[in-house]
Length: 167
Image (cartoon, rainbow, N blue to C red; front, side, top):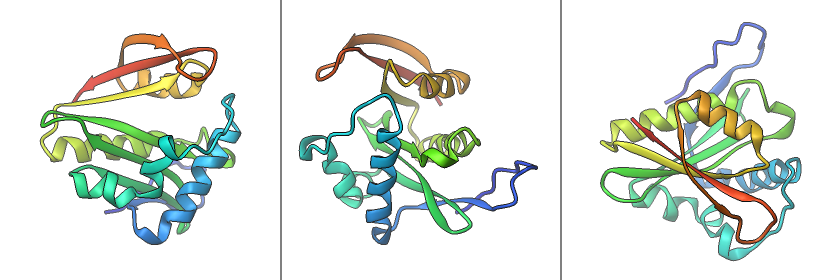
């Protein structure tokens, strides 16, 4: 299960594959670096990070999926879907290393996760993001996600934006 982006100016091959437990440290590093490069403050909190410390248990063993995007074999992007119920999944942990952002890798990974959810019989993908992550909002909206609500963020000044897409 791999694919390439098809970007003409890219000389490296971008492939997407299923998470392997040997990716654990790299997945954590990508998460940490992507958050540190964003307007959000990185805080390691076991309550919020448990899924990244146990990807197989939280995603793969529950009927979800967790994929990694690799550039010339090196993991540079992550993303997962976690079942909410028999009809819907939640998109989680879509991250790209800062030096590789805005090259289409996150969008490619999102597309593959959508395909995986559809192939598994899910009808809807839900997600949430922070209002300060405007590039993420643009990606989701350009892929047909519709905003469903906003709520005050529980730990920082700002809002959490919720999106949904039928697949």
